[in-house]
Image (cartoon, rainbow, N blue to C red; front, top):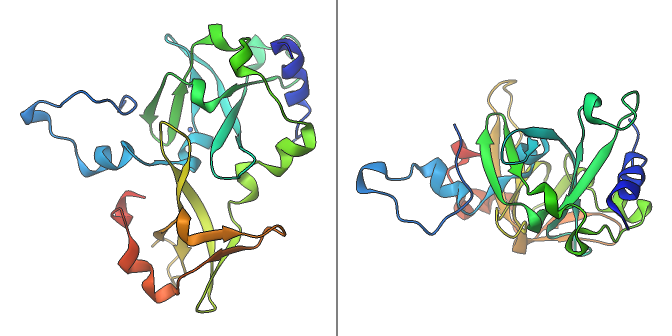
Length: 226
């Protein structure tokens, strides 16, 4: 499927995200030790951050991230769909989208409040970047289908899924982020649940195999970093 045709398909998919490089093996100088925030983002980045970010080439922004599409296991980001600025669209009066496989990105950068994805535009039409989903399959795999859903704990309580964390290199989901219920409008209390503690039924029910009172004992990251 050629790039131009794919753009038309994705345009109709659904009608109406301080700069840090992607993880590197290079050692940091002693006087430039990574902060806890940087250390966390070597292995986990926010899906909501990606959804709020831009897509860039080496020189400039080329669009805004619109959708993240999971693979058939619902455990890894497979495609990133982004929307072109109106002035760059072939028909400026209409919304036009492009896509690329997450694994084909060349880097991530953190530009509050979003996480920007860098790509090499020359690979967009390559055989390794072809869309192999129908419109309905893509809809069923949207990350947004899981966000804001309720996660049921074995102790009977349910919490809303506010975000997910993925490995920045592979795109695999590592944690679900849930929001604890508080009486304050402004005091957001977020906690992570490891993906291997979560199951999603065929009917879409999301369950954690742990009780809610265990959640604070199973945090891999400081909740203030979420």
